[in-house]
Length: 393
Image (cartoon, rainbow, N blue to C red; front, side, top):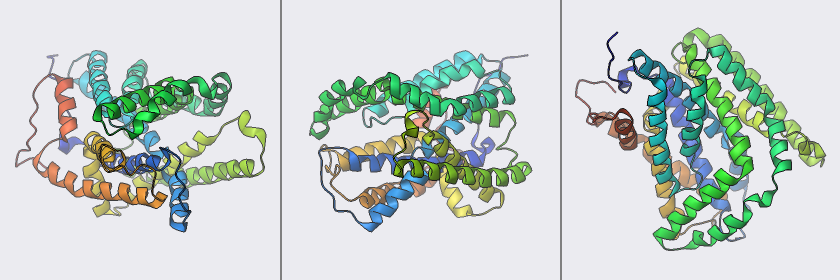
């Protein structure tokens, strides 16, 4: 068989629901990242208000940690798509994906200079680990992910007991004074070193979070192996059942957590089920969006989500760069000086602007700017950015 040149998937061949889910996840990311600024900086007393209290509760139970777990599922799905595409062209999927993850890690370094909550580096590293499963069946990937998911509460306990909280504290305390600097070089240094101390050296993140991410990636890989998202109407009944079961599970686990906390029980010293609640809620969101999509609901809203999702990398990095100008002293220096609802309002406003901008951009171009750069570096050739008039969005 003649070897063909590997190439990105054409827009007309993309699975719409995947981009819609990515768009929703990016909304959750900007909400999470911007509200994080409300807690960072010198202690400031903010008078409590009803709006902030309600929004903080919604954020905690609906968005917090649900977006990166959803994106991890979608990353696993995308990994399987790329592997299948490259293999079909007669190329080595391992060599190709290593190159792809290398360039993602380079992009992650740039993004980390603006935001020390960068997630791209995690996908780049775990993507290499995922190569161990590139020939796996849907069942193997699914059950491997299930084992990791079941183990999460015990992994969390092990990490908490084996690694004291001051494991990374000294270095972080040295970096945080740079947070208030008016100098761009200090800002870059603070973000890069903050990333190192908080997300590379911190065991709770480096181990527990990564186990959770990898489990989600395996579930996404398994979903692609059975072409779940390409055959959604065939899975309508299981999707509805999954929605209700996961909703019941999320509600029950969160209630148990609240009861344990309110009664000061020492259960969480031996068993940490928080990520079970996160995962169940993420599945509620994923299955709920798929259910609405199958039923042809919210078409206008989903069209906007789809456009944002097609430019996930560009929109994610743009959100982080905008945040620097809004919250740090190289910009307006808002920091943690405002009520919680202000950060929610800013996040929603930024995302709302990204929707029409993404739609407009994709009318004229094939990819978002960052996606275009990443693809060219990965495929080692120049790819057309400007959209042909005859090509559909």
